Image 1 (cartoon, helix red, strand yellow):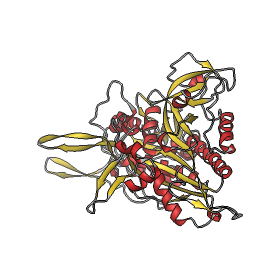
Image 2 (cartoon, rainbow, N blue to C red):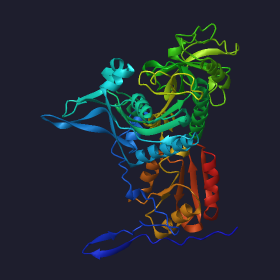
Image 3 (cartoon, rainbow, N blue to C red):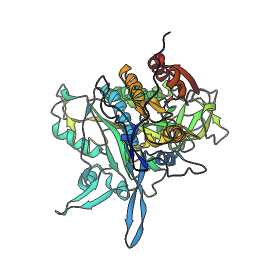
Image 4 (cartoon, rainbow, N blue to C red):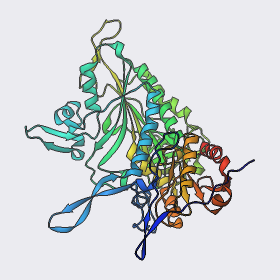
Length: 513
């Protein structure tokens, strides 16, 4: 196979100025031959360095050290120093790219459900929350203020009341159902003890899907469809997620399920069978008879479809869950699992990344969201609702906690800030830029070139810390013979690849991530 011989690089242009040299950098900004903008690390604010690693560094601390976020500073009166505001963070360019990729992936799965994207106001009223009956229960966690007209307003920690009222004013007929609406927005909660960085903060980004159906049967079918979409989303992230029965808490409704990542950094407790992977949340464990493994009887008003759905989800568990011996955080010797009667239930720590609620008429009744039935033989009936959330900010923190090693972060391909980083061992030349252009124009890879004026060793350590899935090194072998070193930490690969084969090789490698 013929190889393209890369000429030796022109390092830089310089001109004499007295007894010193003034360096005039080659400008690499602009577009590739195919008209795509170049991604260069010199043009992206990445404030790495200057923050020392702690002995037992958490994922949150790695995000700060790698330049993904910073905690918001707050000036203290009469004190010249600054103190950080607990639970509030500034997302920096690399962190924002991760968030945007999560949102794009969620967008794909929400569109597959036929859902419409909207954006609700962050302002809500005490009156609306008092009508739903949730105001007093959540009052300590609500950010509240009074405007110049003496109106009592709040920053929304969630939008069930607002979306229900909006739809009640616009829904004209049962023919408009089913209706599926979602948003990805900033929310606020006055946490008593913000902790673990993005895991539990006072300001956060969430994706919420709200569904509206005419009948209970239709609402249960929607619940199944959303479950499938959520499983697909977490599968794209290559995260070992458990789907667990859960308590509905202040949200209300007839039943709910959580999507949990088993990790020692988790705040929830789950019981997992080490044989069939049946899973239940720690809150539900208290309500279960561990000798029978069955849920409590449904309350009044629960339709037959609601009762059936719980058993259906038990039977479907397994495809996307960890086996007992793969999960971490074992906390008990185990109790016999009545779901399979072969394994034992063991308590483990887990982190909630998503939560689905079958709301039924919890909000449509008090907020008067009703429609007439097709036969018109009875008074308008309340609409059956569902609410489905995924914590986008929390997901960033969870991946940083779960997928990292002693060298730094290790992002899944789907949400990595960039899929491939090119690191030249010497100052960037026009040939290095042309190599970058060839990779970008070859396919759909998300590539960035490290053209910063730092040492090669520093840039390699920085690439490991940031956690790019693949690193391509342009060293002496590339300059002399057209061969590059390719590194992939998650697959344990370090291999020399010819320039002519690079595009196809990287695409094949990325398909495995």
